[in-house]
Length: 157
Image (cartoon, rainbow, N blue to C red; front, side):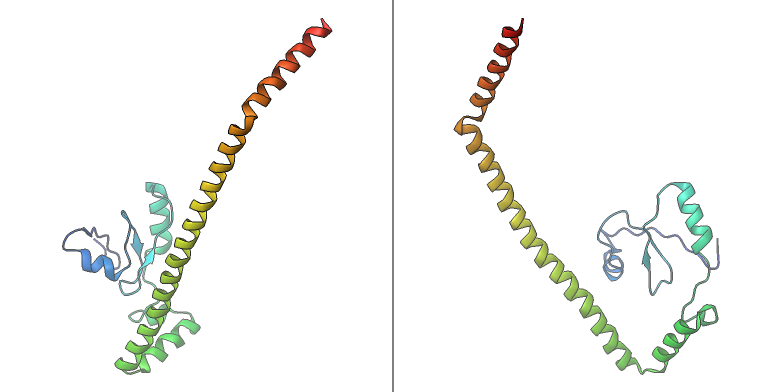
């Protein structure tokens, strides 16, 4: 065991569903790391060597409210400014920032739907153009062209 590190497994389809929602876990398996109040996505390799190298480099006490002495001056100042706020003011600020994320996700989904519709339209148009060209005699043109190439070759012998 470690006094500073925890590896946990959560079943997001059962009792762990609220915790998974709270931390934005949507796909499985998902690896998170960092301060439990501010978990970050792990995006590195999944081999033992990759995970060990990442753990050795990153899984140690980090700058946080509880470890403010480990913070760079800029981060320390930011934490201290949040600590000076009353709970309601800080909650309001968190909600505003979370709303920005929700709006960005909503905009992404909306624009993605438009892209999907455009893709489907372009794909249908492409397929129709290919079918029209083939139905207009492309295959026969190629066949005649090939027979001309074959007859040109026989004349040379």
